[in-house]
Structures are given as structure tokens and as C-alpha cells.
Image (tube, rainbow, N blue to C red; front, top):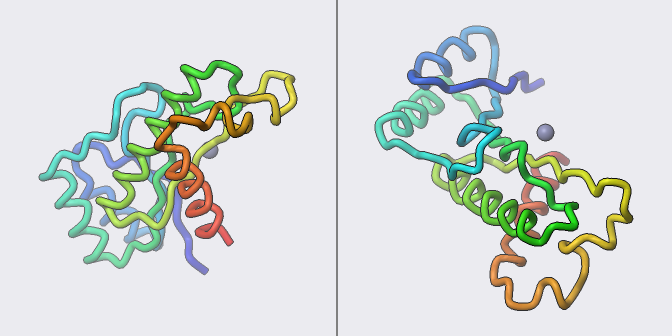
Length: 148
Ligand SMILES: [Zn+2]
């Protein structure tokens, strides 16, 4: 069995990975940015290198990134859904950089409306002109494939 948990990498990712591995963790989930803010993932090269090296050294695999909590793909607010898609795409790009197996995201709340009335599922009008729609669908399929 592969055992792991959600960890904060903090200022010293190598130490966090080493301590987790010492406790038997062989997989982990991390945030790529503050989960309560819209800021894109910051991949500082020194911390990233330390994390990647520690992962390899301690055999921590797979790693998943949990997307920020502000994502709401079920919202009726197209601006909010657009921000959510931008954030999710940035998180997918960060996942590729760190060699993560997948991105986990909470879908969000439809606030009592039917899910099929949300901007994400109103097709094709809402999807027209959005070049990132296919990327988002890929994000969800990666996550699904990783969990099965
Ligand atoms: Zn979640």
C-alpha cells in the first residue's frame, strides 16, 4: 500500500520530504500556491530543485497538486468560472513542471441550481472562443485517470 498525505512544503521542501519519508510516506499531495488566494503557482527554482531532488532521493511518488479552494466550476458567474479555469490551467502547468501525477480540484458549488445550467456546461455558446476549454477537460481526465 502506498501511504501519504497532504503536506505543506514550507521554506524547506527537502526537509519536509525527508521527514515525511521517514514516517513512511511514499506519496504526497501539495498546494502549488496559497489555497485561499488567486495567485498563480510560484515555482522558485531553488525550492523546486530541492523538492525534486528530495522526491527522487526518498522515492516519493506519486505526487498530486491540490488546486486552490477558490475554484468554482459550477458557478453561474462566467467571470469566476474564467478565473477558475485560468487557475486550474496554471496548476496543471505547475504539475507538469514538478512531475506530478495529477491535479485534484474541488468542482465547487452550483448554489442549488442544476449543474447543467452553469457556464461550464452550457455548450457550445459558452465554450465558443475559449481556447482553454480543451485543456480544462484534459485536467479533469488526468485527475480521474490518476485516481482509478
Ligand atoms: Zn479537495
